[in-house]
Length: 396
Ligand SMILES: *Cc1c(COP(=O)(O)O)cnc(C)c1O
Image (cartoon, rainbow, N blue to C red; front, side, top):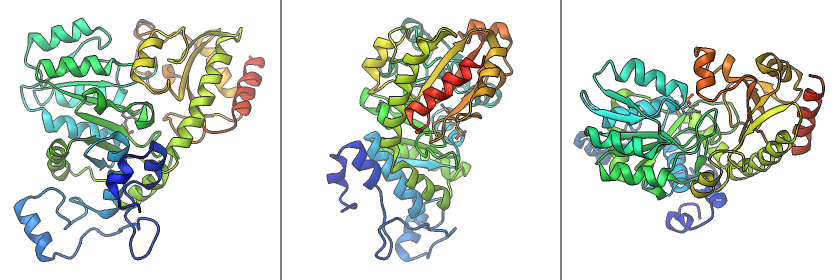
């Protein structure tokens, strides 16, 4: 049943989350962990390897059935022809970008990206003579201007960014990229395939840090890339060369994690929406940033681009960073930790974590006000999470 790929492709995302990709071994229901670095070099495999065929089944850096199973699952969920998994989200991002960028090439992007991505663009890509051109991705005229003024190879953005939860106008950005011959690539970690399918909007590559919502259990690091066969093959050659391979045990955990993505996502989303509304009405809260609230700048755009707003809720507590710290300390259920998208709720403040190297001035200019808190909604009972916030705010 789970091997009938064409049938599965037409099913709902929940059914695909559970069944797509499963590669049973000897009479087993589940994909075994193929804990093997190498494979019998039969004639067919040898010929593929010699010819440089992508995914020659000879060695785990080239191909492994445990990884293949989860790649197929992710490809199905993104509506993509194929996918690749990596040892981390950063490995997926860097390997993909270095597939399409050589010395002298140009990438147009925004500074409002995952911090690690900006670090690598600034510290590594520029070192290789790649022109990293930052613009305001929310300003489509500025994007067009940048694409027009100089030949651009890659247009790169995120579906929903951190921590302002701004939404990128993916359909318009894909159109602009195509018009000027750039490859549109998006990091869709915050949205997941449940929230958005960027390939439907004309994006050519979609990237995930599967460390977050896709795996959803805060127990592995990993990355994934999805797109059409030809593009994924191109990226595969660089994965082979750079070696950011996922390992079979990691892949097996990821496969199990994704099986519940749809219900985890739905639960976290429902709670996040209720929590955002509850926080917005609370007298000790300065403001709430949640794309499902009418008060968010991207409320309309979110309805156009996303299937549902976000499992992240950001807000500013009155009393500034000190009050924010106190609020976090007061929380009983939510843990203070970086990362996001797990079954357990996590709380953090950008000023002391993701944006710790920024000056206060720069943070304020970027819209990260005093007392700014980021909440990753887990799948605990909604009323318990709201009660946790209530008691924590009461004690401020
Ligand atoms: C976490 C994250 C990454 C990096 O992923 P790792 O798995 O930590 O390497 C990239 N992009 C976004 C949006 C992220 O949240």
